[in-house]
Length: 311
Image (tube, rainbow, N blue to C red; front, side, top):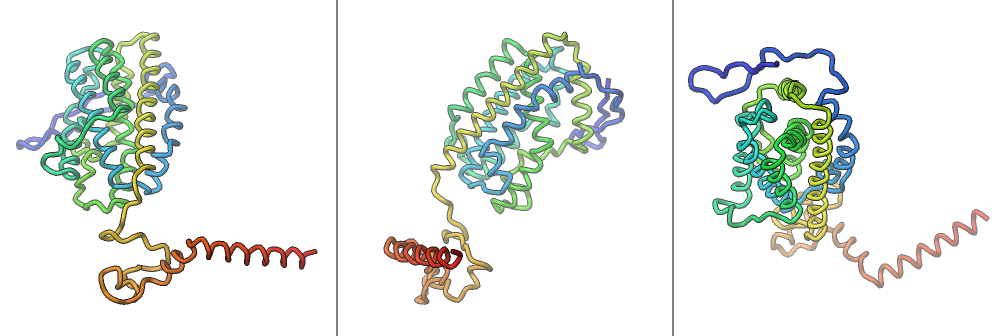
């Protein structure tokens, strides 16, 4: 069995250390391999949801990121409540790492940053998230052996792709370098994420489970992915209904080259009498129906002339 070493002395926070992680040949029947192969298609579909694709490209609105954080808070509150309930259950306790993995408190800090001291009064569980939460509670109370699937799907993802999302969110939303708003992605008590994931998989493989139970865990992991995709789709629909966010204190994003604030015509946006930026004026003029009609006629004439020339 792989071992996690003692925490540092001197009253410091407990931090997991790794002394020996069995790294022998992996069997196709090991639970970690069955989960990896059995959820590959679900994983790919989740990565290709519109919400995730937009997120990875940095196209994430702050209001939408806040709602995603709310969804995560309710999800992890349910998951960790059921993990605590089953901490002594032999089908789960080898994977019980509350100090290293639990995310509820980190998410509470993020919500306090985004919503203020009274954040609990300002949030609510969405329909898609509630369905996910209900399933986690059912599993924890009636089929605790399947809790492995939900823990694996969430925490291993957080330690892998979640670290990419952390950097994207910090950059796209201009969040503080001190990591307020993205505490969820910060695992202070894991000194080496790669080694921890190896340790976690080794402990999964050491669980005393028959073939049928392993197959049920893989099936449940695919359900977990589907629940996540339903939350992503819900967020995507909300995102499309949100108005485009203003940038730089309420001004629209500048589509021209260079910093708009260095444009001498930008002053009217902040209250002076100078005319507006020529770029924005041209874009605004081009949106007028009459101008569009004239432009279309000119383009048609140009296309006709070009066709005549080619002939």
